[in-house]
Image 1 (cartoon, rainbow, N blue to C red):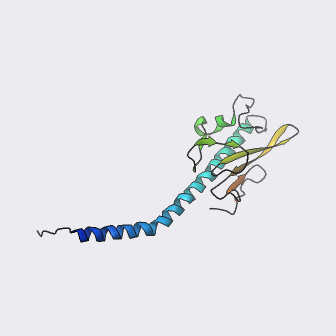
Image 2: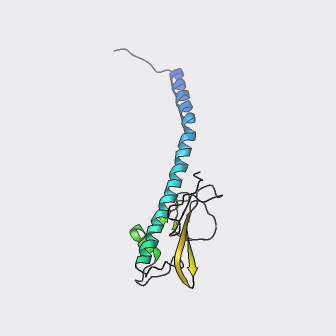
Image 3: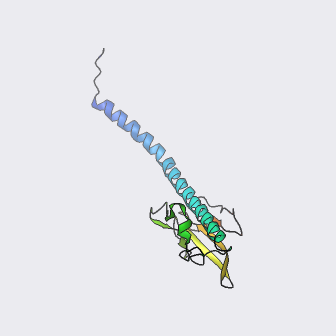
Length: 152
């Protein structure tokens, strides 16, 4: 067996190599994190859309006028979400989803009812990413799969 001693120069060289690799990977890791958050926003929107459709099935085809409105079975939109709990905003990590539509907010899944003659027969679910110019996704029974071009 040979005795190899690790010198300070060896440690410095290894540290420099690790630093170079970390600096090279940093932009890719940041991009992957942003992409993951956008995927989560879109996923939250689809979950809300599924909950809205289930709500309407149990309410003679009418959607809620606001997120806390009870249907004929005494259930709110939240009761139709998985685990009957709020969804997590992937940017803030807060349990706030879905939120009634009140303007652009990073990472939010928002619900906007379209009310005609005091009945909500249609809706739009909007998901916002970090870029607030255009939504990441808009869902509703009028355009069920319209994905916005922006994927930042």
